[in-house]
Length: 305
Image 1 (cartoon, rainbow, N blue to C red):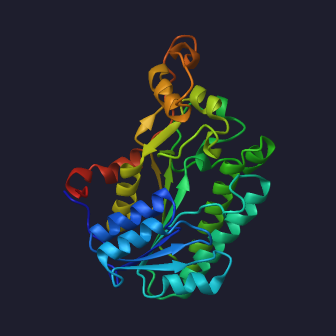
Image 2: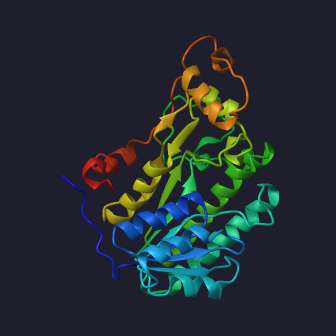
């Protein structure tokens, strides 16, 4: 049975930040599905592709907004008339690397955006893009035998201790967003994705800090772009969705798939399968996205061509 469809107040939605790989692909998919899209782009964001989409679909279907996440009024302008927000955070152009200062930046941005949503009567739903790293890291991770799922949270003290700045930023921002959403009565759903496989992915991606430990623990997970976009659209349009959804479609827990990932990350390096073997055996998987599977079971009928 197909999921119940979400019926928004208006057919207009906002994607913020729309200049990155996930944001721009979401814009394209939403336009294809007939939505009017407000594409909110942070300062210095690349808008060439978005302008091409606007030329194809018309200015009445795609509106591009310059949006500073630390300027409350610019956020409000991008959200006006929208029934939903797809929010994903990209670091500012002048600070592309995660460090201890990134935590405050990402938390402040999330707070500003959720506060703006609370002030607008038209916003029915917020789809907040988060990360699987908000779930994976804790002091007692070696002693946990049960599967990890969307109910778990990374320990912020552990993340700070081991300088896992990406995980700390994502965890702190998502917790701040949930606190405000619950206080203001905002209907919010988070999609906590694995490492996004894309053309710009390199070994320097901040998600990969601690990759060896994630692989050893069986929690190194990745997600393909189209799968992740489908998940965002699905949790938006399905009225029954709530809470957090752990989203991935590959688990890197065998030497062969670890080698494939390594070739993507380091295409010019010669690699050997034995480098990724722990005692010659497969790593036991301990992470579960079964909650999301309840939604994506309908993807065959729900998938966009």
